[in-house]
Length: 135
Image (cartoon, rainbow, N blue to C red; front, side, top):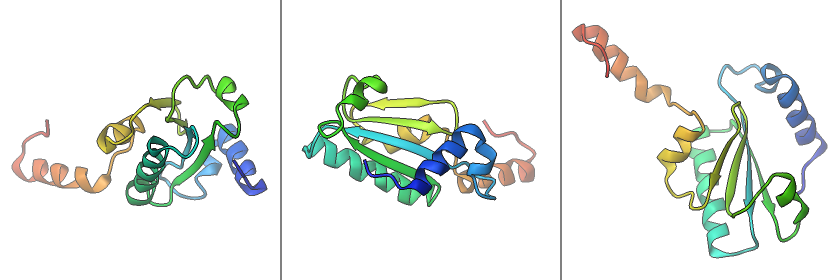
């Protein structure tokens, strides 16, 4: 659970003033915490899946902190963690929790309120061209 002073300051800034945390970007900065229990297969898969989402979908707009509850058991009570793996989205609001298997990328992205602009653009262009409305 090593966190640098810069990361701590960025999180505090983001919690108090979300507009400043984005650092000039109009896109949301995601602050995620993944709670795991040891070096189990489930923990490894959860870490791999969330890192994949951060790298491929959120592309540099993700501050991911992985917390091993075997090393930091007091944090389980503070965050009310009852099962692992648990992913908590701290920012942008609202706070969201994902408990258990994190393999369903689409479900995670929907829960993060993430929309990819490139998927929306063809629908808008098509509806303007045909005069129809998207569903």
